[in-house]
Image (cartoon, rainbow, N blue to C red):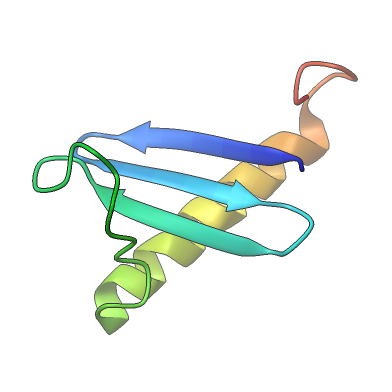
Length: 68
C-alpha cells in the first residue's frame, strides 16, 4: 500500500493513496498516534484535506522511486 506522510509542528498526516484516506494525529497530545483526529471537527477535517492535497502534489511531482 502506497502511503505518504508529513509533519507540521505538532501535526502528522498520513495519506493512503489506494483508499484515498488521510489520517491526522496531534503528536503533542497523542505521541503514540492512537487517535486519528481527521474527522473530529470541521477545522481538523480541513487541515487533513490541506495536508492530503500537499502530499498528493508531492507524490505526482516526485522523481520515480523517490515517492515509494
